[in-house]
Length: 324
Length: 255
Image 1 (tube, rainbow over the protein chains, first blue to last red):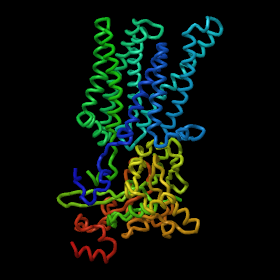
Image 2: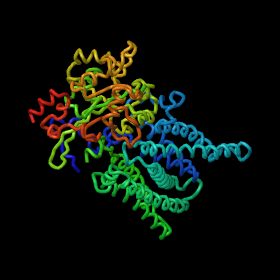
Image 3: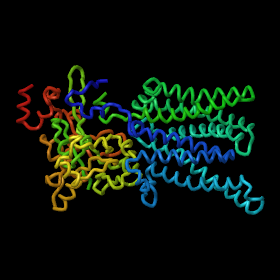
Image 4: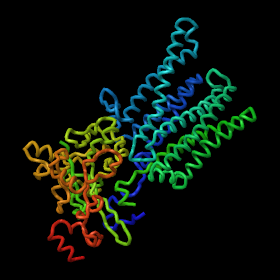
């Protein structure tokens, strides 16, 4: 590397000739973006899994996480939050190219269909309607709403990944696998949180506590896929470009290595997987271990988003031949 | 028509006048700079060189910032200039992240404390806030002095030739290192410079087609484009030596 140091009297913007970390979305006010993305993954993952296992409380919790945590945090981050309506059609046609605008559209649609689905599911779960034509109609509406809300919740969960992967300026993010990593991690978190809500409610949806085994089984598969995807993502980035390779090094042995190894690998993957395997062999899982697995999962969700945002490094502006 | 700029790196004296001119022209807040001067020192085989790159928004033909803007606050005019409507910007900073050239500024409160923090605004600052209001919480960048271009063209002036229709940084450059003109016209001053001196853009691999080109002695590759090696050392203010023969003699004498 031929690059040395700039002269003291010419240090202005010398940083632009080095690979520099992005700060807008992770430092100072940018922390709100990180938290918003975490709650986006947790909320959408939880809602998606909850509607699959008929857990009304889980779906409600997922919906509320998205509406009361993800959305407000993202809005507070904006420089001009009161103008957020400008992102939505018909005020703007930006959804055609902008992933943030698309994300807003997806979230708004999810909020509408999700809300309607929560109401239909609540009606079905209560004693309002006796079996009959009205009951069948609500049941049919509930199924349709679950499909539609489920579709939009997947889009709400995955758009953050696409938003980042679109940025050519940050080579570590600029890969098609990132949205899949983020979506799959969200599903894994959703599974864990559904189990947590099941613990509190004394069963998962209409099923009893014995249903935990099914969730545990699904969790094992999703966690395994998660580990493979994450490994593939990092391996791919390490030979994608020198800047992305630098991001991987920062992640594995750099400043955020401790968060990566402890938060993502140990708490987010190894610990829940180990607990899951214990339950497979013993045939039973204690509440304490289950709670530990859920906490580990959630810690992993926070760590994953933090690490990905933190090691987003810009490619230097000047021609490589001149700088290196 | 597509406005563009060519910057001759062999002429830049790194005087920062372009940065200052922009600051005055747009009444920029204290910690905001639209054009920047990158400085780096390289040492190839014991021959240290100080190189500067004046950079600003590249007004890319295929601008990522236009595509990512969620409110269509960032748009591209028919003449290729990328402009931001501060009344539409929501301050999401997606464009700041997506710009491969890191040429966008988010104007936060901390970046606009006034030129004398803790004191009342000066008359100049008060006037500036009326003439060129900057909205805290929005994103800003170089706009090729679009207001000068528009006003000048209304009077029938030609940007790049007539000062009143030309960006302030181009006007102020004492070494005449910057040239402004129409990239779509093959006979324009900028097109000729790019063609004859092998103009290059920053990070062409992104495919954004920047409208700011650079020419220099090395990347252009032509031997005749090269400034004298001894003049390329940091201690000799190398680029002045190629301004004209007079200056060349003077700085050759100093070497």
